[in-house]
Length: 331
Image 1: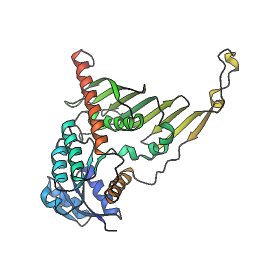
Image 2: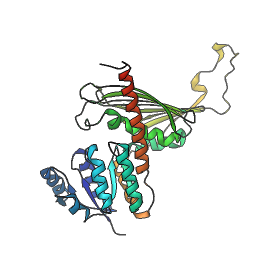
Image 3: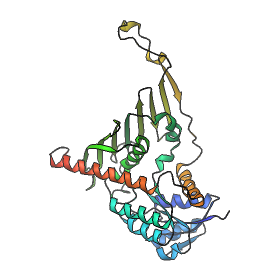
Image 4: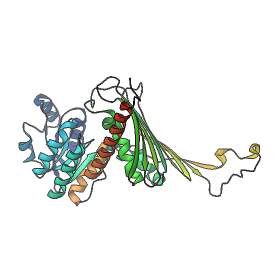
């Protein structure tokens, strides 16, 4: 089978990882790199013996697929130009800065019969993959995503920078319309919201509470999933997780003497999740993208998935604005 000709637009921190992985994958041929900083593009391209392109049109004529790893406000314009040129696109999250731009990208990909994937890489986290069979019936979800300050990504609020990962995960699991959103958020070091918390209510009765901060002392990336019969805790930073399930037949009589009620550990089955830590999530994501190009299938995180996550993120930002207008969460 012919290898898929690939390129990376954006040779920064994340784009350089895309280039490295395309160079390593047997199903891909890394053709080149493009960046507004030509010297940076040349440096990245030289590492893999490929070409540094100087224009998007020139690059589009030489490749089948592109990873778009540029600032969010360029996703829509560059994504549409690539799709219009007949190139399959994996765009880093968020899909665009505005839902209207994302919708145009989704529409264009459909008209051109091209793969449009969105880089919500946490969907490929081995801990979340291992937990997938245990969390599909979750009625309540908690997520906490904290990170020390980094200027990269601060052109958008933390809701689009970090929280959108967890928004996407929750939407992929609950699969129900969001009927209610309440949120608060604060700017700390930037002119954007740097800390945020949101509560999402769904038509099927499920609830999610998501928190994100990019001004934390330490990194935290944890999610907890609650259902009537099970509680699952996932640490996506450590790529590990634990499932706590009620033992079959385990019951507690409410009339029983509290002193005689068995310890909780005797009422539940504790199971460590088997997480495949050997594969890099980004490599699995890019493999999924390439496989969809070859097979004509749908990516694990499609353009429509990215659009839906962006729409919910927009509702969260609207709720934050309302909280500010009401005098809540003001600095």
